Image (cartoon, rainbow, N blue to C red; front, side, top):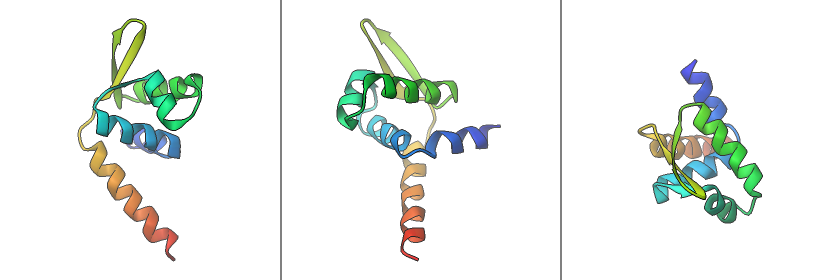
Length: 92
């Protein structure tokens, strides 16, 4: 179910941060994402693979790196709206 996959993809904060990085940079390697988020490459790789498996990301291999990029339009808009809704809920 696409809606459940999308919810699964953006539920964890770290995956939303990964998506925000990719919205800004357009493409990034596991190493770049891990460095920017101060997480292990193993952790970054697991999140990226899940986002890929859910159909949200694609990648291009340029050995020794894989460069991930967003494969779905409007993710940046969705993330902005999501953050606004979370802010409203937090203010209550």
